[in-house]
Figure 1 (cartoon, one colour):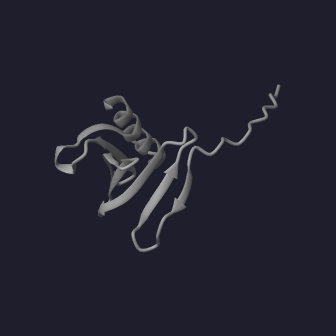
Figure 2 (cartoon, rainbow, N blue to C red):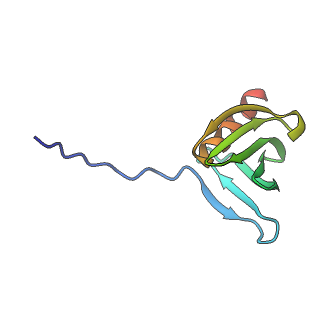
Length: 100
């Protein structure tokens, strides 16, 4: 017995558009039209901005992305881990929305 399942490809969650080559910044646009900016802070650490506000950070630790909430890296608290970059950024974005 076989089951024939038609699986549609997933809809893109974000569209990535580089702002400038030299600044290493990316602008991620979610379907809800909330702008999320990503900025490289140091090796394997990225700042996540929602609009113009620093919402938190994503650190890469091997194959894992660690989401941290807070405006300053020294005061940021860990809110989760994911094997997916997009999920880690989304954790930071949701945390920021819940705080505001």
